[in-house]
Structures are given as structure tokens and as C-alpha cells.
Image (cartoon, rainbow over all chains, first blue to last red; front, side, top):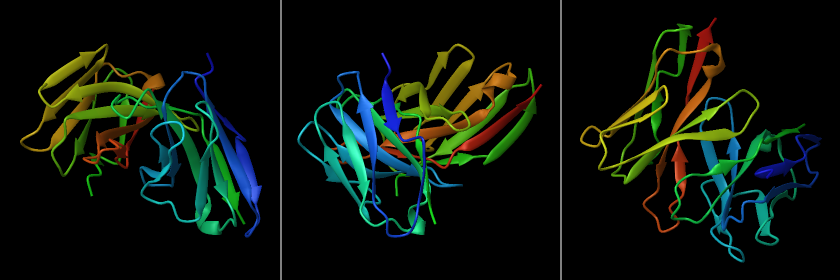
Length: 113
Length: 112
């Protein structure tokens, strides 16, 4: 049982490049989340998917898009990366929006030059 | 914002001592959670306390919740070097999505 997995672990992009961060969970969870974490700040929600087939904006969605590919996978896409998107990105999942505990992946450290 | 704020931002103690960190929040909640993050890792859920509970224990962890003051504290007793990590409180939003707001965290260093 791998839990929540994320790929890649590290990535360096140039301004304007695009990339997709991948997330998968094997816990049969319905809800999945993408957060970013910047120094001195807590986690900020980018997008979430309360259940398969639905996605919604979180606190900081600008510059990002998401796809809930199936129940297991939730990807985050940066269409045109900017230095302000340099951050550590975490994916999380939970059984349902009414289950409080979230389970986190190990993170992707992204640097945009 | 409902975001919780932890206090202190950083805490350094000797192994064996107790560590106390606090979280304040702004709106009514039905529960509050604490998470731990080791350096370079994802967050790990530690404990959840509901609004009708005043205190909860889990191993060396003790969490209190004072809904009248909108605050919570996390006490780690007999700290170990392995407790070195950042600790975050998280509160649910009041929206139907029931997402979580995370505080900015307390960085705990336990010196062997």
C-alpha cells in the first residue's frame, strides 16, 4: 500500500515552459487536493476534487489547471511557468469531504528560473 | 481568513523536555487537527480534537481545545530528537467542500 505518490520529486523549469505534476493514491479515496507550500507560509490550496469527475478552485488557482483522470489520479498542470510558481507542491487525499484526515504525498520541489 | 496561526514560529528544546505549541483560529469550528512535517517530507496527521472535547491524548501527545478563546495547544512530553519537525494546525472551512486551512507552523528542534 503506497499511499499517495507524486512524480517527479524535483523539477527545474525555465519561465514559460509547461509541465504536469502527477499524483496517484491507492487508498480508494474519493477526494484529492493540490497544495503549494512556500517558506514561512502554511499550505495553500490550489485545486481540489471532491469526487471523481469534479474539480474546483481553491485559494490560489491562477496559473494552474487540474485533471481528475480517474478515481486514483489527479494531475496539476502549469501551462506557462513563472518564477512565482517556484514552490513545493503537495498532493493529498481523503476518503470523502466529510472525513477530516488528509493523507499527503512526499511533495514535488519545483524551481522556475 | 480562517487560517490558524501557530505560536511560537520556532522552538528549540533539550531532549527530554516538554514542548508546547499553540494555535489560534478565527471562526467557529467543529474540529481541529494537528499535523507533523519532517524536513523534505509530506504532512502526517497526528491527532484530531472535536469541538465538544477539551483535551485528548495520543501517546506522548496532548492536545487541548478552548473554543471560547478559539485556541488549541499541542504538548509533546519527554521530547526526542526524532520529534524535530514542523507542526501545523488545520481547521475545516465552513463551506460545503469542508476543505482544510493550515496554519504557518511551528518549527521544533529537539537537541540531543
